[in-house]
Image (cartoon, rainbow, N blue to C red; front, side):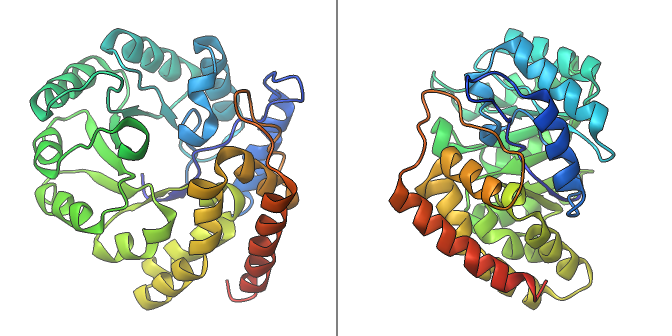
Length: 293
């Protein structure tokens, strides 16, 4: 995947049910603002709070509406469930599968490498590795990724570590492979692109897709200084919708911008008045920035 794409939020209604109409509208909302691909059932999609049937239906709806590639999250702690979800996603219209590192149990790098080889051997669509240590406490090391990049059905990786040094080391170890390395941390998008990354899967692209598109386009035009400056201008908003206020804050910010984000699912809780005021301030700063995009 090249360019930028959101780990698309899943709109739920006030009772917690999947709102398919809002999801269809949301696909159009982010596509109209320039995203290059879509990632249903990722971390910001609340996929871990959904049933397998709901995840498959979400992917199907997104694939029906999308005019850009669909990279579907299908990873689970075990291979059997991951492969079942990957098969279902492929049948639903996904172009590729984003497979998070197995979590809950601890695994060493050799085990992770063997697992991904087994998944890639059996997957009907290209596999993208996904390292997100903040949620899983598991990190795919650059050396492991370098070896996996040689597999013909391993197409790339989303690196959400936020560690540009490790990102560069991974780039070095995958340089000779046909391998996409995308960053999952919006606060370092410009730096990751300048280092050689191919794009980003970013929570920020849910609420401010114009910004992530502008950052990528600046890089593509050869202006990495502009890409870094735009990234820096979005750091506070990105931090607020990820580390500070999480998915409820992200969905609130999206609704404030007119996106049909719906509600967050339990056990998430709505943000309080103080958080709303802080997010409103960040959104006001973003509206000021939009004139420069």
